[in-house]
Length: 76
Image 1 (cartoon, helix red, strand yellow):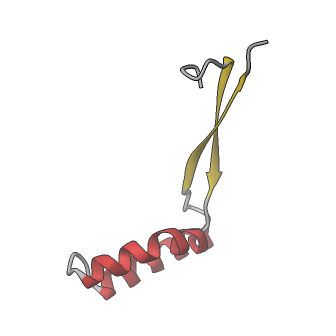
Image 2: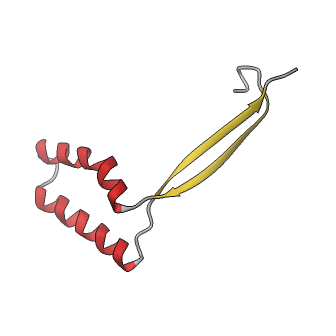
């Protein structure tokens, strides 16, 4: 934005906490591909999800992503 000529550029980071359901949507395909190419096994993936679900139930799982909102002002 600065290179585009905007002024007073601000960046605000936000942490968005995830659920296991969200992780299944975003990571499920990658894990299936890892099973398909032999990097991991169905059993290992099932154990992975079971542990995450346990953590979510018990309250010790904390996952999230950082998103950035960036804004600037066009010069007069």
